[in-house]
Length: 255
Image 1 (cartoon, helix red, strand yellow):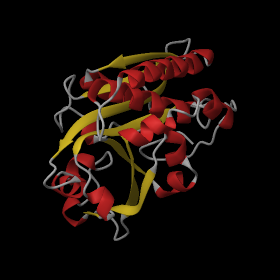
Image 2 (cartoon, one colour; image 1 turned 45 degrees about the vertical axis):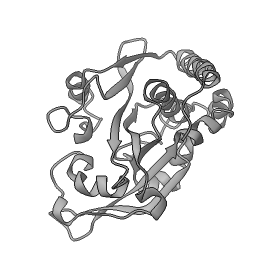
Image 3 (cartoon, one colour; image 1 turned 180 degrees about the horizontal axis):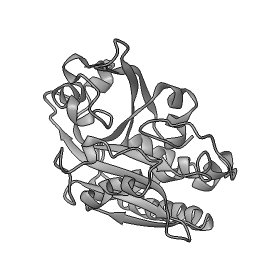
């Protein structure tokens, strides 16, 4: 895995500026932060938004300015209209991503305490299982109506990836996604190049039917390759419609 080059820094700076312009044109102001206690308080003023997942909750896992940051978007009335977060995770090269996930599965569980972690399972392809080194876990993408379903779904994750690459030069970025969202194309919209179907089976206490999630991931080289596609073109592929579906997509309420 190559390091970030000078020309990458220049291109990523322009990429970030392009993302900020698209967001600004929608009348949204974005702010970055590293106080995850503050980030976890956002659902208290956004009743339609689910609580923050444990991986980004400082009461449950080690997350701070040293290994994470978040982004919040506000409309003209200073109402929260989007959130997302990313966290640096160092994965031992002797074990790999699969071993890391199995040992820390409780940290990655969806919000709430309705799951039996001891009976929950994760399986990955050999390539994904062996991923190691500095990685970033991405999540908490939430977009409020009427912005949901438009250009922000494609622009915001890539903005976070770009900042993370400049800050940490991670080997890869990974996240989790509900199957329906993935089948609707959310993984491609967010910029993930790889999808592990059926990878997470979260066992519920109240039901024998597990809750399924899929791993999504992309390498730094994948991401830098994809920056050749202008964000303006992606924004045109997903025009802002002014209306949106009201169904929840769990970790990523954005469709």
